[in-house]
Amino acid sequence: MTGTLADIIPPASTPAPPGGTARAALRTARPRQWLKNVLVFAAPGAAGVLFHGHVLYRTLAAFGLFCVASAGTYFLNDVLDAAQDRRHPTKRLRPVASGQLPVPAAVGVAIGLMVVALGLSALLGPKFLVAMATYLVIPGVGYSLWLKHEPVFDIGAVAVGFIVRAVAGGLAAYVPLSDWFLIVASFGSLFMVVGKRYAEHLGLGVEAADHRSTLGRYTVAYLRYVGAVSSAVAIAGYCLWAFEKATPNGYTVHGAIWFQLSIAPFVLAILRYALVLESGGGGAPEDVVLGDRALQALGALWMLSFALGVYAL
Image 1 (cartoon, rainbow, N blue to C red):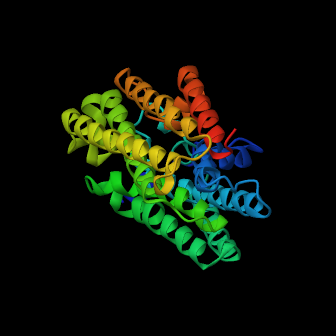
Image 2 (tube, rainbow, N blue to C red):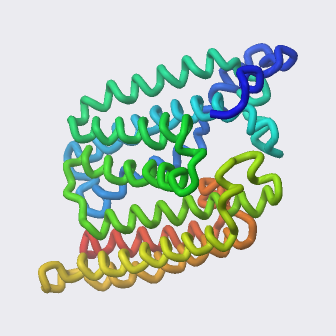
């Protein structure tokens, strides 16, 4: 945490407009970023059991709980980052940084949402509860208070947030997690997070360290190196996973060709995302996914081919 209390609490001259506190709170919850929580559907979807009995309901519940939990962490992060956000060209417009949402209200909402998410997680089983607690402790509170100021650890903490979502979906649905699934989820997450740091580094230039202290410790060459390593491992892991799905125990299954064909759109999607990063995008991964039509088409082709393999059509 940096800055004084005066830095964090916005001036009294910028109150929220009448009836605007609720809108400010909704903006702080960042509904667009809830797109990340669809990762909870990955494990049951890959196992072909997403629409089996109660699995879909448990997975939807997991998705809802992660939306609540992630919203809580966004409120906390915005309170602690208010001083830095005011020096950022776009983040200065966030409700807490601009004074539209009072700090006490934001803190209260953050605590309330995280407590609710953690409490209700017990209904999905002790393992899911542990996953939710891990999410709240490491990429949530731990990142906001300390880890975001530590080079490498800040990248790892954010990546953990993606990985936990993917693992939690399997735990909620009682789906065994493949080793290759975990490798792809881990290094794919790392690639996304490094890409975000890379985009921030390019976009903010010499002022990058003023907004995020770790950016002053990273070089463009280092971020490119980590991005190359993580994307390479993710691609290799996915290829091995696809071939394992196609030939479990050495026997070729019906529909195996679709698993193998799914490698092409997966690799192309990684390469497309890398191109977006080099073009200056990627600062907000959800905006890239929602705004890049080519990436959406590749994602749809990948999901279609993988689904055809899972359901052996």
